[in-house]
Length: 509
Ligand SMILES: *Cc1c(COP(=O)(O)O)cnc(C)c1O
Image (cartoon, rainbow, N blue to C red):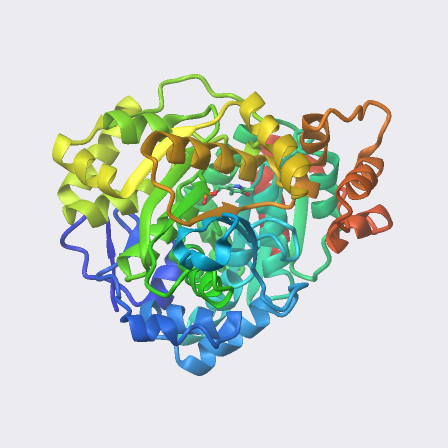
C-alpha cells in the first residue's frame, strides 16, 4: 500500500513507515492510502473473538502493509498495556427497551451506546492514537534506516500535550518537547504535564497564549538554520498532530471494536446498520469512522457534532467553508477549532481529484474560504449529517444524563449527545447510535459540576474531583488522583524569543 498526496497527481507515493515519519507530503498535502481496504462480513466477524490489541493489528495490517505482523503485534502490545480495563475501550449501553422486549427483535431496541475512549493514561481519547503513534514511529525509524533522533515538537492548549508526552516518554530514538501557554491551561492540565517522567521529555511554559506557542513552533519547523544546527546534533524535527497518518489509522480500530461489541452484547444483530455521532474538532476522529464505513463496517449516517464554533455545521449544510468568523472559548475546548485539517482527506476521497483539492486549499490559505461544487455537497450529505449544540444545551444534557440514567458524561460528549438527539428528532432515523465519548468527565470537572448546579467557588481542583466522585459514585481516574502528590519536574518558563534556543539546547542534551 502506497501513501499518496491529497494535492498532487505526480507524487509517486511512499510506504506507510516513510509517510508516518514525514507527517506531511512534500507538496503540503496530506498522506492518504492509494486505496481503502475492504473487509468481507466474514473478516469483520473474525474480530469478535479477538482482544483489542489483536483487532488493532488486524485493521492496521491492511493499511501498514510494510510492517510485519510481529512488528504490529509488538506496537499494539506496548501501546495498550497500560490501560486500566481489559477491553481498552468500553461501551456504555443505554437501551430504552420497550416493555415486551423479548418479543421484539434486537434491532428494534432504541439503543444508544457511548463508546468510552478515555480509559487510557491521560483520560482523553487522544491516548488511543498517541499511545501507539510513538511505537509506529520507533519501528519506522528502524525500517527506513533513519539514524537521526526524532524530536517531536508540540504546542498545546492542554490535552494533546499530555497525551503526546505519555506516549513518547522513554521511546528509544525519540525526544519530545511541549510548549504550553503560561497560565493558559487548567491547573490539572498543567500538573499533568509538569509531572511527566521520562529521560527524553521536556515541558516548557511560554509567556504568551496558545497562538504564540503554535506560531513559535511553526517558525522553528520552517527555519532552515535551525534544521541545519539540529542536523549537526543528529536530530530531525517531527510532529505528533492529527494530520499524521500514524495518528489517524489507530482510530479506525475502535469503530470496528464498538460494532462487534454491540453484536456480542446482543444489542444488534450482525449486519444491522448503526449510526455514529462524533464530537468534532480537527475532523480526525470522525474521519476514522468514515474510513470504517468505507471499509465495509455497516455504518449508516456519520453525525458531525460541533459546539458554537460551528464551521463544520455550516460547511456541510451550505457547501461553504469560511473561517472568517468569530472564535469562541467554550466548555468543550478541544473542539474550539476553526481549521479542521483532516477534512482535506475526506474531500480527496470523495473527488479523487488532487488538482481540485489543491485549488480549494490554496483558496482557504489566501481568502480563508472555499466553496465546493453542489455535486460534491450532495455526495457528502448522503454520508454526513452536521449540527451543533450551544453551551447551555450541552450543560443540560450533562445534568439530564446524570439524573435520568445515572451516567456521567463530559462536556464534549454532551455536545455529541445533544446533536445525536437533534438528528433523531429531525430525521426520525432511530437506528442504533454509537456516540464517541472522548474524555473523562473528571478532566473537565469545573464545567461538569456547574452544569449540575454545584457551587464550586470554595473548592480547589482536587476538592472538585472529590465532589464529582461523591456525586457520581465513580472513582477518580488514577492518573488524575495521583497528581496531588506527584513531584513537579518541569519548571521552565520562557519568552517567545527564546523558544529556538530552548529547542536547540534540549536537542543537544
Ligand atoms: C481532540 C478532541 C476532540 C476532537 O477530535 P478531532 O479528532 O480533533 O475531531 C473531541 N473531544 C476531545 C475530548 C478531544 O480531546
